[in-house]
Every structure is written in structure tokens, then in C-alpha cells.
Image (cartoon, rainbow, N blue to C red; front, side, top):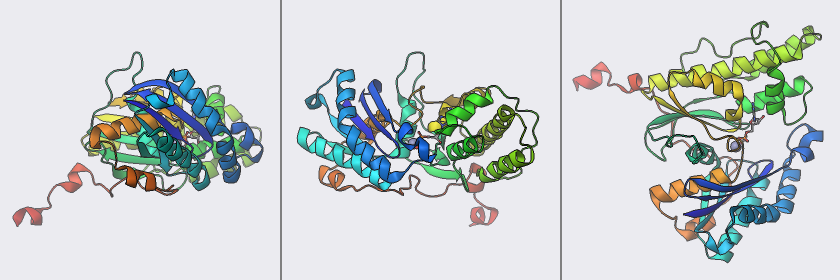
Length: 352
Ligand code: KG4
Ligand code: ZN
């Protein structure tokens, strides 16, 4: 199945082409230079830039994949969550393209796209993750843990109570006067620092649940820098990164144990972080990560999610699919889930 996928949920115009689980092309036009002077994404500017670039990026992806528009079996696009105006560009373009090419249109949830990035076939990688597994999504907009008992079912286990992990990287990068986008720049600086020396707090260290919180750590960095203007910025970056990585790995590992899962799928932009990848390699779990290049927002992951959706549920009804609107806030989970122990019958239930 040959699918073209489009993601315009935030500030990257991403278009990918996949054949089954094989990625034939993955073109991402970054808007980083446009937003850098503002130090963050300006939504209105993002939509205009998507509009200006999308046609060229689609053409480039088709060329690199060596396929023609009429070869495609389906065209997919992110429907949400994300910036409303930005989503509208990719969604509207994809619908028009599908209509014109008489190809089915498949709307995709952005987070399901991030998870599907782990399905990509890549040299040296083993078979794709099979449910049941626990899934950690850590991006700029989301940090959330799902239990996935079967393909396509997402039960929310926990998540950030404030900033997303990537958002915390970006905000702390700003405190360290690093250029936008901050996450990768902070990770690079952390490579030169020592994570063992500074007194920064460990977020949610004593909790029994499966939530995250990163805004207190961010404030602690701000206060620390104010009091110690001459501190090594590399040490601050390394310590901050260590705290975030440890929190993500500890909570995910504990949740996997509580839910009886031995496989952990980690997705989203922060999955590109090397320290996180190293810490996960040491965890007593089968860990699946997206290949480099598919962790941050891209179109190939949306195409991969569409292939998976067709495999599970077939091609969607086209009257319904073409009526799908951009959804800036779109939940993925069916509802809260509880660990295995909590689901065991209570004594009075068993007695009935
Ligand atoms: O998934 P993504 O591309 O976009 C969203 O859907 O949010 O994630 C982007 C986020 C940004 O906050 C970025 O700073 C962070 O992922 N990120 C990183 C790294 N690469 C991207 N954070 C830490 N280390 C990295 N190497
Ligand atoms: Zn994303």
C-alpha cells in the first residue's frame, strides 16, 4: 500500500511517502528560521508559511520517492491536535489532492502518527512493537503515558500536569540564552556538562502515580541562574536534562511494571534525545524508539499511521473522512486506566 502523509500540526511542513512500513521519502520544511526571532512559534506566521511551501514539499516528496500522484493508494493528513490554522492548511490540501487524484483520504491523530513512527522498517531494527505495550509520548505539546492493550486502543495512564517535556527543554534553553529551537541545542550543551553537581530538584520524586511535572524544575533553573550567574551553563543543562530523563524513564518503567507490560514504545520529539535513549537502553524492558529522523514531526509517520489504520479497520468511509475538520484539541485515549492491582476485584465484589 503506497501512501502519502502530510503533517502541518505546528511549525514543520512534513510530507512523507511510504510503501507499507518502508519509508520511501520524508521531506520536512522547517520554519525554525522564521520563528527564531520570536523565540517561539507564531501561529499566524506558521499557517501562512505552510500555505506557501506545502505544494513544493509534496512535489519534492513524490520525486524523492520516485512515484506519481496517480500511483498513490491513499492520502493521509493530521487532523489534530495542533495549531488550528496550521492544521487547516495540511488537512485542506490533502483533501483536495485526494479528491483530485480520486484517491481515498485518511485523517490521522497526530499522536497516533508519533507512535506509528516506531513501526518504520529500517536497517538493523528488529520487528515492530506488538501490543500489548506501554507507550510514552514526549513532545513539545504532549507528555503522556498510554497503556495499549491491543492495536488502536489507547488507555491514558498518566501525563504531565503542566509543561510537556519538550516544552520544558525549550523554555530552559531560553533561560540559558540558547537559540530557538531549544531542545536539541540544550541537549548538545549538556554533552559538555556534568549532571552530578548542582542542587536541582527531582520532579515528582515521591509520587505513587504515573504523572510528570516539569514547570517546578524549570523555575528552579531560573532561580539558580539568578543566584549563580557565573555557574557553568553546560552543568546546568546537563543536570536539567538528567532530571527530565530520569523522571521519564522512572515513571514509564514503574507504570510498565504496574500494568504488567514488558514492552515500552517511546515516541515524540524528545525521543530524539541521546541521553534519554541511553537511559532507556539500561531499562529492564523491550524498548522501541522511532528511527532517527522520524522522532520529531514529519509526514512519513502520518502515512505509516494510515497504513496501520487501513490494516486494522479498512479504508474509512469517504463521506465521513472528507467531512473531518481540523481539531486543535483532540484526545487519543478512551478514558483513564488503572494498574493491574487496582483492577483486581475488591473483597466485597468477589463476595457477591
Ligand atoms: O514531536 P515534536 O516534533 O513536535 C510536537 O508535536 O510537539 O517535538 C518537538 C519537541 C520540541 O520541544 C523540541 O525541543 C524537542 O521535541 N526535542 C528535543 C530534542 N529534539 C527535539 N528535546 C530534547 N532533546 C532533543 N534532542
Ligand atoms: Zn508532534
